[in-house]
Length: 221
Image 1: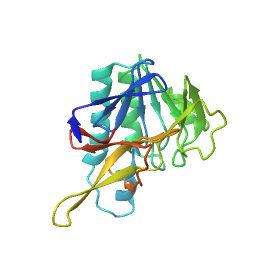
Image 2: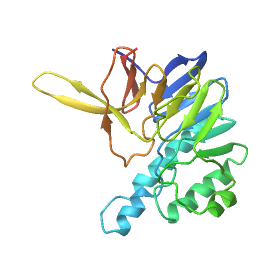
Image 3: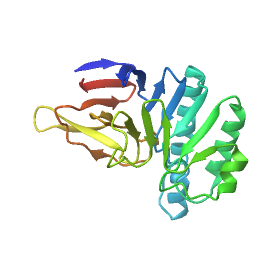
Image 4: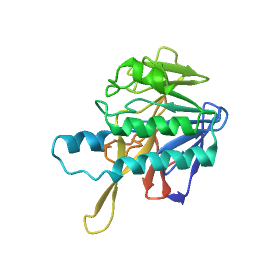
């Protein structure tokens, strides 16, 4: 198992940099791929009486700003569940970020939590795609595709919040978010801090890269 601050991966002739902030930088397109940001989720739970620190939402935006400054992408592609639920103040903060980086084109492939009225996205200048966005050799979606209509294309998706379990001595077990790449499909980890995890079974053709704080662990290359 190798450990690095980022990991450069090649899929379908394209180069993807896996970042410990749970994002992917696509070199050939100068684009960032981000899944399951779930902005506003902390505020949503606080409204229902569950004590969730407001700093959770701020941390997600801070990570996004850091990535934008580091990579200076032409495009940011959100693979669904950008905003968790109904409108709250976190949306205002996000729109201010979009204004700050007005030279970047922000796009959303709609997910099941993206239920805001279309007018919110239009006013924010956010381009919305219904379910599937095809760019180069990739089909970008929120929900992983169960059937690929074009076998030569590779599906990159979110929604699952993939994780991998690591076992140590004395029955120790650690579950970490991960990038999970199969033969025809890759799953991005949830970018949002306040999200769950779903452990994945690793097959012989799978490549798995766990995220441990500020490092990428190449579990299976």
